Image (cartoon, rainbow, N blue to C red; front, top):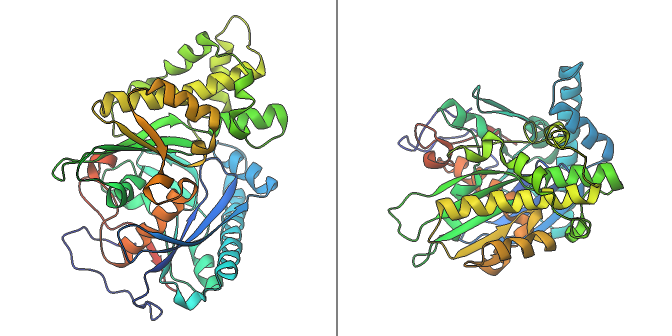
Length: 387
């Protein structure tokens, strides 16, 4: 693990495969646990240029295993070890598919940035765990792999997440207008980017993005997600349930703050449902969960970026037509679009961010923003696993 901050010289890695190439691969499997996304990206310019992308579905058995590891259970260590290897193998398969599709040799890639699959994120005790054995990825691909990005920030007193705001700032800042980048993955987070260079970027998790909707949809329909929010659109928002859920202390906490699937999960939702006089219909719960995502996002944008008039969406939630339509109505004073309009497809922003974070590490540059994570300073993140 690198032990440095931004004031130290760039580290010299004993990796003979490191060249002047600025081609990187980014890997991301988020809290939705639906797929392993892999992008090949050229990072030689400010705006990353995608050379190729693949999304390899998460096998149902692995998804179930990973979801069970987000909560305490029996024989956790052995199950975690099995899942650690399975996530790494899935990563290797995605990388090989990507290289075949782009006809790029592994030797041309500078490094892989692997987020790993989060199974526990516990900022209250100062620790977090992402699995997906980076040694195995480096060994089987022959490409230097950078992983375990969160824990160095935590070692410096930070929350370890979100990490994508530093990337958003580097790529999406505009000198004449403030912007909000809203990443709606399993968990939703926002990055507030002021126009003025001297003003700090802030960013934090706002609460559930797709994770509760995906889980509820799967339990009641067998579908992994509610495409376009079409099922939610058939329901009616249950206001008592919405108010009960929004009363959770997380939503009123001031940033920096981060969260995960180990907090916003089915039992959390079910506890809220049991507080009602009668359980709502399944489609009404789905509609309410969509509104929960919208209201928590909109509230934090209005609170922490009141003058901002540009909001750009990325992540899986950007493809949820009903969610975007509702968010557009609630934030009527803002221009809302996806990051596609800024030159980076919304589906691939997060994977690209981890390619960028790998580049930061290999160039001896910090990857965190203390104003976002509450770390004591900027840090070079991640561990390097040479090819």
